[in-house]
Length: 426
Image (cartoon, rainbow, N blue to C red; front, side, top):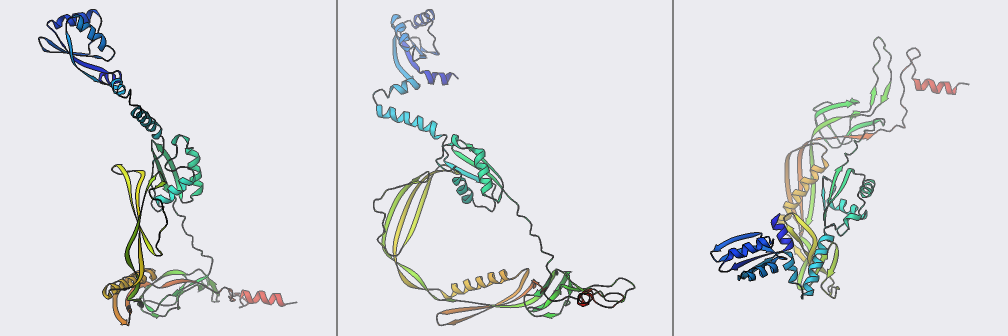
């Protein structure tokens, strides 16, 4: 506390030299002069400390005791400001820095987003900008609750949104909404059909009648699980009850053989850089760009733009919205580029495997075999794979066909036929 007071009001440390320094101390006591610190360096020298306001009075008392005051050391805010008495530009700069420090501490300079998993930070920051909060916004003028409500109404994927202003940082905390479960439409009659040729290794009908058993060979388009089921009569009833249409469902695994082909041209269009280039430099402060070049036109017909951005990071992990950028425009002309056959083949193999995994619903790849053929400038790669996969696909049935209802136990007619008979009778 004493150090803070001495810095605010200023303090002077000086040496009092005389034949009788004790007389100086006695005079200070009689005149009620408070010395903050007093050290005796030798029999004739005292080192004392007083406030800046009491220093002239101390000098008069020392002169009255025939003592000399030597080597005063002045420190504190008043002596610091006295150095600007005739330096008006420095004084104005100091006042400007103080104003900017007080005002700038309430301006939003950074926006940090946390809690999001699938929604990118840029999307949330962009929506927040549309609601009036971005870098350069005056913090005290932001209606936090109104902004939170507007963002929640605009973004249906959020279940929670919180905005906190901490000095120059806007902290955004979000929670994403859990996706609603997809409900199966089980009222539509369907069949489970085969999506590929293969040998069934596992068949598990959940709803409907299985048309095959494990070990059977099926072709693409065959009905594996039928949605048309025959109703079983109750005990002690021999008449048939007819059929009913249901939403068939189940799991059918089969061993399949798949063949896929991909090709690529070994001669591709490329670029030949001429060596000519134009460089533009700029400074971006809180999203406002300041260009350091006059002519913004580019004298090339075909060119690439290479951007280099360097942000100001005063502390690790903290980035301020001050970006120094450089854009280089490089001229090029069209040129044919010869691709390496080995690397092109590796690329095609990777793409074929990705396409094979994408077309499989469930299962695994058991064995793969690649063959390569080059015709002129075209490289062709063929993949033959053996897989164990889910081949059952749901297919909607034709509900326009007439389905006979259950048999009448006494008349032996279907309910549909009996209805038509009644409608035709006079």
